[in-house]
Image (cartoon, rainbow, N blue to C red; front, side, top):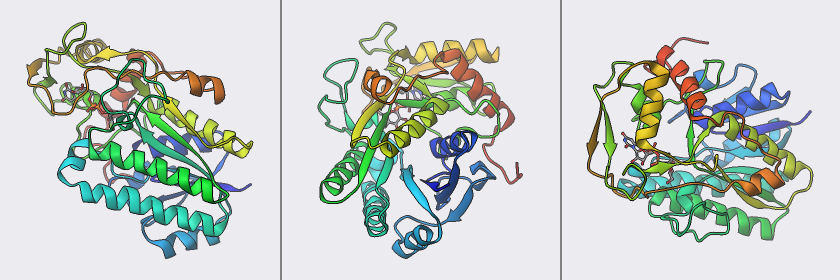
Length: 333
Ligand code: UFG
């Protein structure tokens, strides 16, 4: 059996996808430079190479040594705030990395790639739910680099024997129910892990960024999608390409929006902690409402999110954070 090569397989969504691939009986090779990923997050049955995708000779060596069926590409920087203060870091890692990767893939005749994209490619939406055919006007450099990565794949697919699937995630969250892997960012900026730092006694309250949006309770609405459901979509997308599917782009979300206050309330129920919250000024660049239409992924890929209740999502996240209040440490799993 040929292997699936997962780039960035030690990161949050990458590590969950590696677990899902191995649980589905696939052979997996992981590359990660461990800049933001964690060695402990890599499934013990995956073949692991530590290295950077901007290093062409390193990539060539892996493609020569391993028999690769296709590539799933998560290796990128993904913090919106950092992308605005250090845009060249994002151009370098996200765009130069992908360019080197595509050169090496074309040179080795590897012609299938599933790619981690984002709702940030849309920017401020013109209508809700957001469709894949809607205009893309990113409002931050992170979204801009992901959109440029999609375009790079498109033009490469026009010129070469290569097909790609871009998966535009909405708000990835939750953790593997096995409790072994979960979300760990440094610094953490995402809502659910920050909320759970309160019952973990790492912070006294959660800040609500803006209480005056035009939504049902004045706080921002997001489409929260469990990381294991995202992982399944990558497997289906790779199968779609293996079966001859054309290059394509899909949104991945639950199609249901929750306000920041609703997320906090659900976390109170799950953890049994009062979780004090304070309304503070808006965070720059936050759209008021982001909800996906994932009908295309459901129809074409036959994708069906399984962990679609907010309570289940937060329960799995809480199981991870309660037992790993400092994220990954030096213990081996
Ligand atoms: N929020 C708070 N308090 C916090 C943290 C977040 O109120 O302490 C709010 C935000 O303002 C936002 C919501 O919670 O309304 C969700 O915020 P996250 O930072 O968890 O996620 P974002 O919606 O900002 O970002 C997500 C992905 C990005 C992607 C973006 C697309 O994490 O990778 O959607 O717009 F770029």
